[in-house]
Image 1 (spheres, protein in one colour):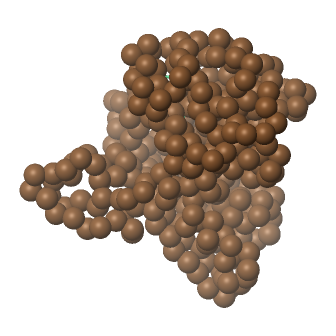
Image 2 (cartoon, protein in one colour):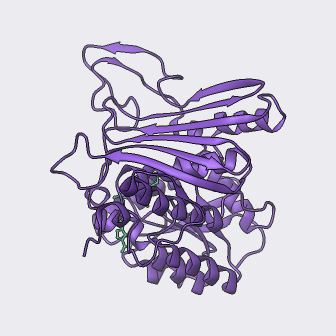
Image 3 (spheres, protein in one colour):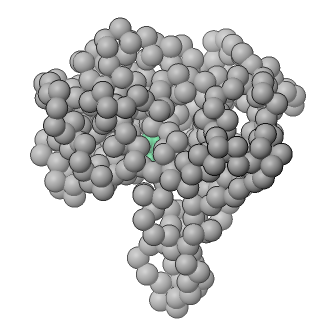
Length: 366
Ligand SMILES: NC(=O)c1ccc[n+]([C@@H]2O[C@H](COP(=O)([O-])OP(=O)(O)OC[C@H]3O[C@@H](n4cnc5c(N)ncnc54)[C@H](O)[C@@H]3O)[C@@H](O)[C@H]2O)c1
């Protein structure tokens, strides 16, 4: 493998998030190039490779990771597959970027971390909110003391539900919206506050709109208490109409800041005929709509992938690691346990033998 030049990347997956990875490497192309993609549906992976000019295509990722020149793999496949894929990549000597949530169980998280360490490869956790330019700026101001002692960090991510069937099937996803998007808020609040220990978590959740489609929760409110006295408030929904909304609020003894990534920066627009695209998961562009611009850049996906490639070259230290992903997994389990009990749950929390986080709320699924 090379020790200089662009990092050679293989992507696992060819749909929604794989597209974001490939587009991000193209938006910031100095550090890395995508040389291969692997995904089991021939038509999908071929179309994906054509769109991004990716020279090598595989239907089985285990074949792709035999390619000697590939240095870093990004995993954009369903949650259920993250652990095995990470372990296989690490054993093949590849650095790993794993999408959120890290995996399904704490045992899997521990094994992923251990195998990557043993094999001397990096396990990088794809939490783009650590790279979102607006949120990074808010954190810089917080770290400078602009808001005094921070007592509340709030992160919300909401839309009307995911694009692929497997998200709704909690056996394959591990949970509903708390698992899917609460993982962002949990990571964000910890990171924003410079990772103080977590004391407790409380969640209230339910299936309010999508009965019949999933047994997973489609709306969740979560409060995290940190040992430094601050709290995180995380709101997630698959029941919010009108397209994606992602926002933060930060409150301290000396000030506050608000940040929004979608409606708050969009151009209020009215169209009788509609147009191509407004924002992720918006159902229509006719009538009033709120088109965003530079969507990936505003999220920080290109910054994230560039950073991970620089880590492979030893130019930076990973800002989002397997340990961040593991903490999120522990909090997800404890959050579902809290929803079942209707009470706060202390951290550290050991989930026992459950195969999926949501089972602590719903009971065993198989
Ligand atoms: N960071 C974010 O904001 C964000 C956003 C969306 C999704 N994600 C995460 O990305 C991952 C993928 O989600 P998605 O939205 O792209 O889902 P998707 O359904 O759009 O795509 C899943 C992809 O995985 C592929 N796949 C399935 N089985 C495979 C296998 N055995 N080997 C190789 N590829 C396989 C499918 O062919 C498909 O290309 C999930 O873990 C999800 O949570 C993260």
